[in-house]
Image (cartoon, rainbow, N blue to C red; front, side, top):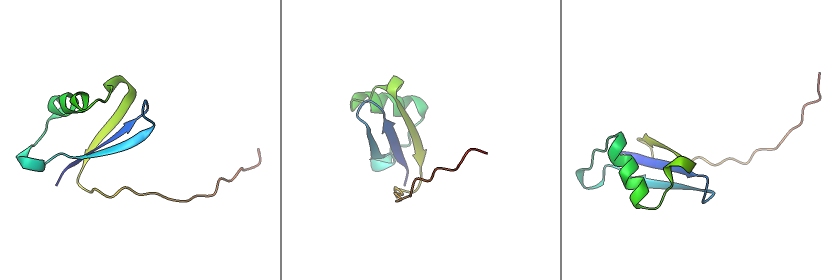
Amino acid sequence: MKYITVLDFEAGRVFQYEASKNGWNPDYESIEEFLTSVGHNLSNCEWMVHDDSQIVTRNAEWRRYPHE
């Protein structure tokens, strides 16, 4: 299974789409056409194709290190 994950800076959200659904094996151009068709502005987002649908979220503590 392939997934497309989009970091959309205009919406301030992360979107994920199933790319291999219905036998679709997308190339670079067809992915960009698809993303545009669902409302993403390609000049204001980043995307990647990957196999794992899991999105990892972590709670991290911000630490400031003193200047040396």
